[in-house]
Image (cartoon, rainbow, N blue to C red; front, side, top):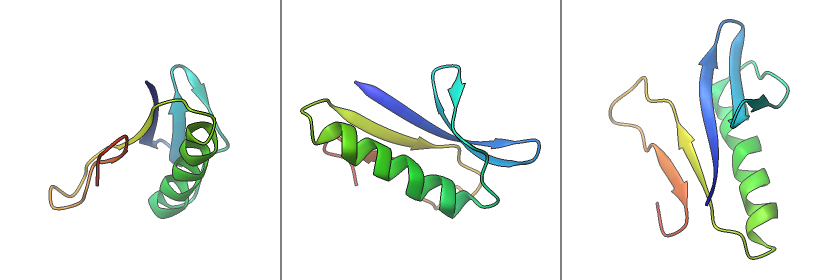
Amino acid sequence: MITFNVVKEKHGWAVRLGEGMTTPFWSKDLAVREAKCLADAIGGHGEHTEVVVECIDPDEPRRWGAGLS
């Protein structure tokens, strides 16, 4: 499974795949949108993917993809 992690960084939010990082984002919403787009694109080729978001608010959903909401 390929996991995209949306994490809070010193200067905003980032999407991480292992140690690699995409361009930093000003908001968590933008980073989540990008992570979902990447997961959908790769998932369209038959790979299992998920997006995991660093939780700051415990009421927010944390995971998307592979049978997750």
